[in-house]
Image 1 (cartoon, helix red, strand yellow):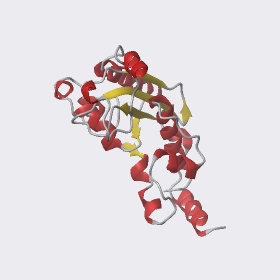
Image 2 (cartoon, rainbow, N blue to C red):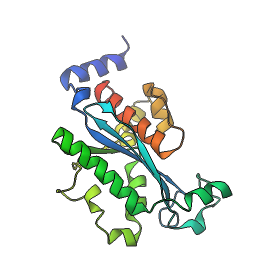
Image 3 (tube, one colour):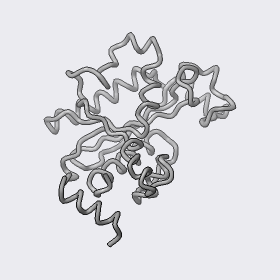
Amino acid sequence: MQSSSILRHARRLAMPIRRRDLTFLAIDTETTGLRPSMCGLVEIGWQPVERGVLLEGMSIVVKPSRHEHLVDDNDICRANDAMWKERAFGETVLSALECVRCSGEGLRSRTGTRPHLAFHNAPFDVSYVCVDQALARKPVRWMFQEDHGPFSRRLFDTQAMVQPLVMRGQLKSQSLKGVCEMLGVKPGNHTAREDARATAECVIELLTGGWI
């Protein structure tokens, strides 16, 4: 048995985490670019996990709040005219976040515990929710700050979770695709719903497979 496999096995014995103990909501966003101060959201997707079982994932297309910067030389998410026309008539960010909150409330009511939130690179996704001053004045702080909200204060971030693996040379790329390949998880297809599903599966494998 390789040393890395022995280490994972030892950690699994020392700190067993059962799949059925995991209840959380994985969230992913698709944006018009990499700079929250200039760009905006175009899609929010989420994947509920109830006692280790993936439920049906969902996503909502939203109206970019800063669509004048939709196409930028530094952006990784470029939209053609057809995509822009489709997304221009999407829901508002607040409507999408309300659906996310309702999903969290559903998990909480069925399990009796507050579900965790999960992201791949949480600071990036969260920044697109919090940067808009109009949103900051609305009651959306429940997602990350308030004790009485549907979610627990514990947050899973797969990018941060694999940092020790990068430092040990076991993982070269902290991208979601790179993490999926290492864990044997089917990668997403760069849609919010599929990337949220991939993030959820990575969280489960990292926590129950003895990787960390």
